Length: 506
Image (cartoon, rainbow, N blue to C red; front, top):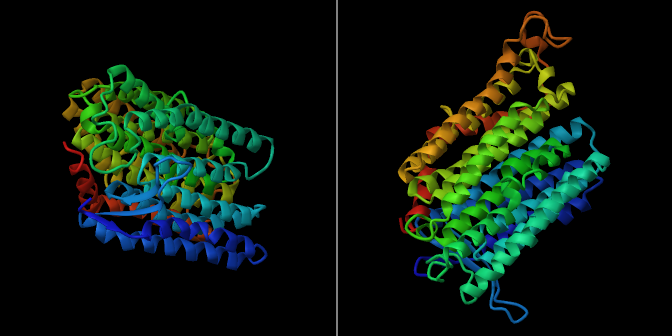
């Protein structure tokens, strides 16, 4: 490609945290050095990503081929950095730094066991995540997707009790079962129909493959359900089950890596495998089926979230619905809806990681994990609950948070597609979002008489504040502010995403 820049920077960005894993293990008896290695690798990774940003923002892509092919198959392992991959890499690499700081406060605050293993696999997971973000073809995407499933399993089963083992089995069964059962056959079919070319960039892989409507629909659903990290129903149960993991892992699952990898893969399939012309009404018109499956997931998961008293489970079902917003926008394949889907990756990431940080801080400081126990908590943890309020606004899609920007594009894209029924889904789901978040905030600051937890002072005073350790409070404050910063500074993100979207041929 004429606008391609050949560089090994994508490879080194992926390796930065992978190479840190053995160093973390080496310093297992020196916690400060171990965590120092984590931070050094995290800042190096972010620095490498930022080094590529001016190139991509300038309208170019970065390419690097690691392996030309193997076993007689002309399918290279290669990296390609475009606007979509750059936005995802920025989200993952920057939030890893904040999550690492939070992890120190959380893991040390609760005196968790096997902290070295935790930080080592955390680092490996971020390597796999950037591998997905920078994947230059469908094979590379699939390999890093599977690597991420295996790297995060020890994190999900961290507590090593019966509940953790059950959650871990469900996690691997769903993620590996669907990827091998659906995504891998879909990849092989795509390889055959495309004549062996699985590369992203230029025309979509199957743009001129002559697919029938039935072939296109089956293939699209196979990819969508095969990449089940996206959490669409009925392959969603792994996500609430994974809440047995420590809260920093939940934050990793819901904001930095796993679920975002799922929706990112679906975005790649829509834009790079099918192409927006083929998937939409002017082509095979199969995207609308996926859009309604996503819409069903949005509504049902929101209704389930309303009934959850466990805060992390409520957040988990909220995530399922929010991910399906991204899938819905991608499936509609209009310029505004695809733009909204990509922007929602960043907007939801900062909003939801704030909420999970707050849930963990509450548990560290009070031992409480049920919403019914949190009335009046705003009096003793005002910083945490204020951040929870901001995170809630971000997920609902209200100002002054980045969620408003991404949801606005999604709604306008749905209107652009002429889908009035799906517009109603956005309206109803937004009301449901508010219904399961805002009462938590209201009860925290304005509890009913007789519902204030024991030990809460009758009159609030800063001298009585009992927040979680600073290593928990500082990260959740940063991510809450980041959601507001992205709202006022969304122009750069929209420009970066716009360059990618403009190349899709709308």
